[in-house]
Length: 347
Image (cartoon, rainbow, N blue to C red; front, side):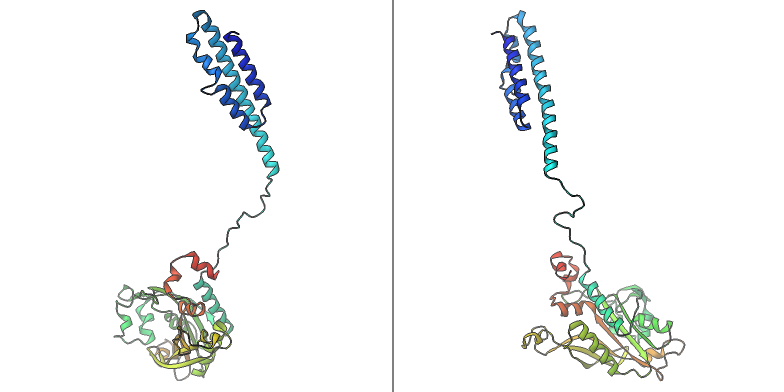
C-alpha cells in the first residue's frame, strides 16, 4: 500500500468514526486518535521530507487535505453534538424563573435598638403622650441653662461634653426638647423625646453616642403618684405584667424632688432565686425622674408655665439599658459591633 493510499484510508476511517460519535467526549477521543501528536496522519505529514523527491508534493498535499478535512468534520460534529446536549439538558432541567432563589435571601430586620425604641414609643403613645424629636446639636442654653444646671456643674466640662463652639454642644440628653416644646405650646403637655445623645464615655456600659427617651408631663395637679403610675404601666408593658416599681430619693438639677426608679427583677422571678443582674437585691435600676423644678417652669418665656399654677414630672431612660435588661445583653458595645451573629438573634 502506497503512502497516498494510507492517507486516504486514514481519512475515511476518521470521517466514519466522527459520524458515528455519540457525544462530545467521544469526539475528543477521536481528535487525539487521528490528529494527536502520536497519531499516524500527522506523522505521515512530518515524514514527507524522507520520501523520494518525486513523491513529496503529492503526499504532502494529500496529507494536508486529509488533516484539514478531518479537523473541519470534527469541528462541525462538536458544535452539533454540543448543541444537542445543551438542548437535552435544558429540557431535563427546566427552571421556573418566577420561583425564589435557593437559598432564599434573608430579609432585613430592625436593629435591636430601633425595635426597642419603637416598642417604648408605642407604650407611651398608648398612655397619651406625643412623640417629638429635637436637634442633636444644640445650644448651651437649652442643654444646660434652661434646665437649671448650675454654672459649675461637672457635666458642663469639656471632659464630659462634646463642644462644637463655646455656646454649642452635641446634646448630652434629649431634655432640651422639653424646654423647646413648652416654649412652643401652653400646658397641658405630655411628650416623650427619643433620640441620640453624646457624652465622653467609652466602656462596657457606656459609649460616646447612645440613645435616650426623655418624658415630660405638665398640667394642673400632677403629682409623684402620677409619675409612679405612668412608669408602672410602662414597666409592665415592657418587662411583664407582674412587675412593680419603687422610687428612691436622688438629685437631678432639673427636677425637685428627684428619684431613681427601679423595677422588680424579672430574672429572680423566673426561678425564685437571686440573680447576678440585680445582685440579689430583687430590684433593677432603669431610669431617673422627678417633679419638674419650679425654676425650669418659671424660665419658660410668656409665663404660661407658672409654677404656682401647673406642675409636672420628667423622666429619662437609656434605650440601650432597657434593651440590655430585657434581653440579657452583657456588653453595650455589642450593639455597635455590627456582628450579624448577634444582630440576627433579635430579628
